[in-house]
Image (tube, rainbow, N blue to C red; front, top):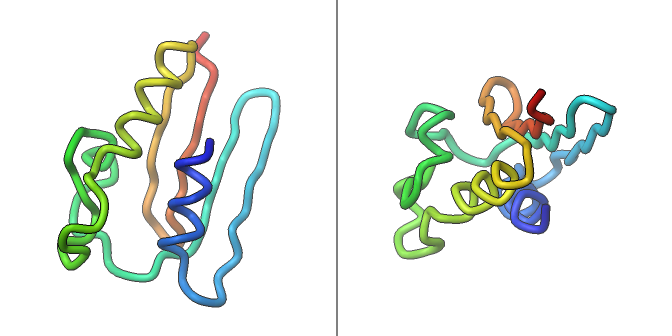
Length: 94
């Protein structure tokens, strides 16, 4: 959760609000994003993929991948959506 919340803080637009919704079926963390994301949302869950090439050497592109793997080992799936906001959805597998 630390990585997901930290990403929301770092990559959120300046006056944007970070929203965390928790229900029995799902946890969602969403935020408006600063810059255009240059890859398909699903690709962001792969290792060494960054959503913004202009970040240069900042970050490794491993954070979302590692978070996804940790959640997966514990029976959850992770989905990323990019529409009006950047949204990470954590779902309990059946």
